[in-house]
Length: 65
Image (tube, rainbow, N blue to C red; front, top):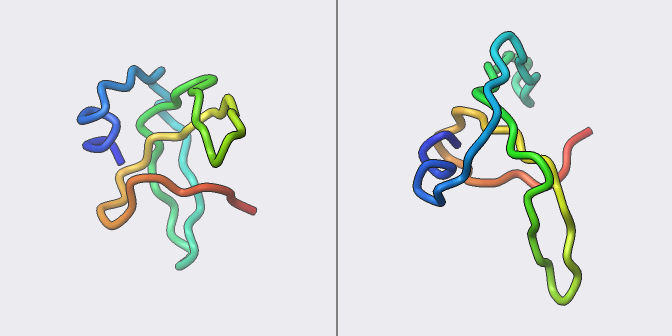
């Protein structure tokens, strides 16, 4: 979410005009993207692009189809 990104001090590139389809069929506007953000799962490090979305009930969504 935008608030989670702000709380973590993440800097993201603005992505006006980009939206994402969600499970209920709605489209949610994307505030921006954090490029090559390092995350660690177990002992594996991954550099991922995270899209900043205004979703109140979720801080991070891993994976999409």
